[in-house]
Length: 94
Image (cartoon, rainbow, N blue to C red):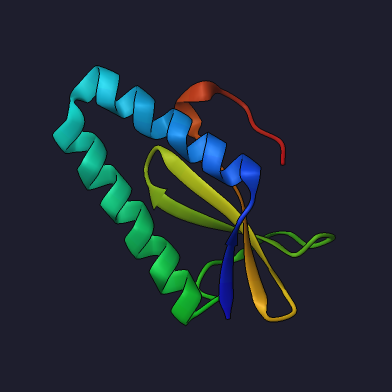
């Protein structure tokens, strides 16, 4: 399967990485980014690795760490990365 990064997933990830870099430094931001890439690679190998979060849309929820969630869905032969969510930002609806 092929990974497709939506524009929103790219933007939401960059916002989180920028926040981490400003508050915790570049080394922490780079380590965080590496963990994200490892998670995406694991999803590419096993798309059903994480549970379905919304049954109607078959959106899946991958907990990357205790503060970050990745929402994605499987569509045909693609894995669509929909959004990264930082739980420090409050309630979420996707």
